[in-house]
Length: 136
Length: 253
Image 1 (cartoon, each protein chain N blue to C red):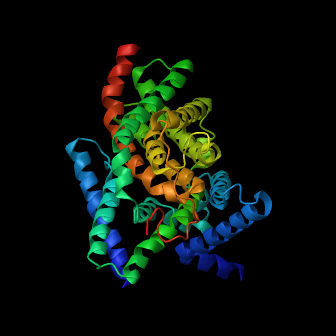
Image 2 (spheres, chains in turn cyan, green; image 1 turned 60 degrees about the vertical axis):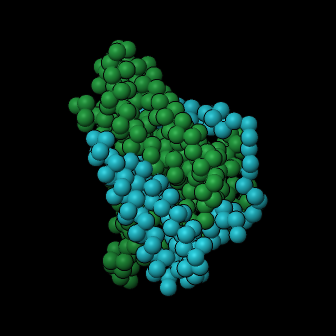
Image 3 (cartoon, rainbow over the protein chains, first blue to last red; image 1 turned 30 degrees about the horizontal axis):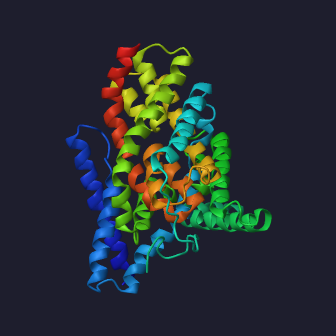
């Protein structure tokens, strides 16, 4: 059933977020430390095991792949609800600080990546593909 | 009829948001195909349209949530808010090759520390060159250049003035928005076409919304890798900025 997939996704998210929150509290910071990342790892792990044992029928998968495909529309909605007006009226200090931080970050990407590059296999990069990067 | 439209859009705000975003995506992909022959990705255009609409909404209402502050479009706030965004980000991890994450793991961690540090230094240099001399002010603005969450949290911890905290939020927003715009434009030059560089990119830039939208506009398959490292960035920033980095700034000024 589709809801099994959605439920599994939601469960991984909650466990990840609680773990991230506990990590943050342990380190004495008022923030969630990597909760989303932990949830992602958990989802990869759990679905991997379920798939191996044949407990992940297509209908269950659909509950996860639907939200996967909704990612870009959600990001567009996020962009539309950003405080863009404040960002660009914050004065030159804010503009330059933000721009310089971004530029340095982008410039360092090839430095840290090094020479070895393995591009993703060419394929349909559209958002509707059920699972980006899946090998089979 | 106008009243009916207003009532329905207001009452069913999330559904209205689905319809509005659906239409935006359709138009963006049409423009991409028709006028750029697919060279500028439809998602990139859609995100730019979103940002432009957010600017219009912000100027119209004076609110903080872009177009979502316009009553007709209030559902955008829920659809694009942290809850559904994080759910969708986690869903992108489905089907990711765990091997890739393991291989880029160490570099991802290095990228995280390097990313927080260079953003902080960039912010600090700009703050100093604009005549800020107190360690608290410099640290708060520099923390804002890390992310727009690290800035105010650091400022509040150190007791910075509300003007400086507002500046730090603006710096973080600028970084996030410019990342959304410039990532797809520079992706080729910086080699952002594989899981490894995506993880490093996520660690270096860190601002979740910027990374999420920037990678979405570049190649949706890279999203889970970048998001994976970026999710640790704000936490690391909050850990380092008001403590080690503040002490370093205090020692220097």
